Length: 437
Image (cartoon, rainbow, N blue to C red; front, side, top):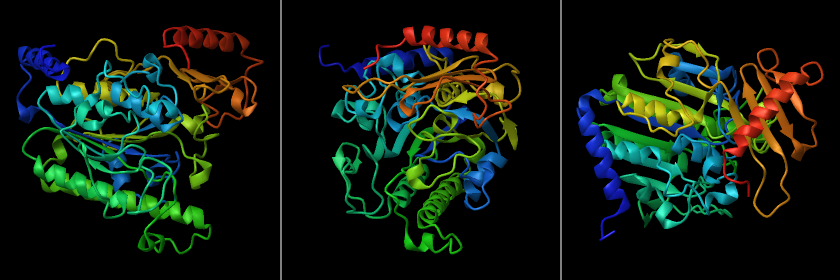
């Protein structure tokens, strides 16, 4: 290419397009902050109904914005789930089915990601925390549109020097960096510094916390905040969540101090459902991480944009983590790419569009390459969800989620025609994706 990089050419094309549309006034474009928890249980926020988890700062996003009670991710596992969030597309479209593929293929270079779109539009872009969607250098955050980053690939470390079987080496951009404090605090500190540094220009900030993923490690002073909890594992989770909330509070405080609270679109969600291993609660949902039952794929999903979205609204129609990208681009005034699976949620959350954002949602989670493939899939259309969970030895199940979010009453026998229709819709969707590994 004569020494001209793909990214440079892409930036020129996108920037020329934006200028033609008249998009360029920094003051008109909101800052965008995406806060992602890891293995967070559906019930483990105060705003989700918990009486023991202390999350007042996260809860303020719900009271000041919209809480989506049927928020979904596209996989019950972190790597493929994050790939969909960052691309706005089902990860199966580009062959990313499970965590083992976070190294190869990761998110292929042919797939554009959210920071690339926003960087080309003049945003400063920052990423702190767990990456998990490509561990070859050309797939690292600095090569995927992030101007600044403090990150590692797997994220599974909290204290400096603690052992881990995962790739937990921190990096600042492309260079090695030392973790010098509890990682949740480090990510929060880095985020606050980023906000202060770039408060005069539009920015995109992706905060990918490890909390409350294993290993279960909390600061002693946070554990001491929950003396009445006798289960040591649950007590550690409560402590870890309190620390996460403290750092969300630091970030919200930095936005407020910089006068940016009214001009910042904030998302808060989890990468998948809670795991039994971290004592999380997905009630009233059934199942958890690694399952396509509701407890594995339905997650807390909060959106706040003061002055643009109603405060304290409960939104019950199904939304997806794939919607973060198109919603962000729409808020920034950009035309959406044609091949997205996600949708711009702004007219739905603002009560301007009464239809379902997603008439159909599908999940396909077959297992790692090189292992016997198991049929684990699900499809949701309106109130109905059809689930095939072969890994767990369960029969095909059809559930009316409007009455039975816990998937307790299998309606397959009495609604056989609906089940057949949904299975046909799923198989049609699957035929449009890359072959399974």
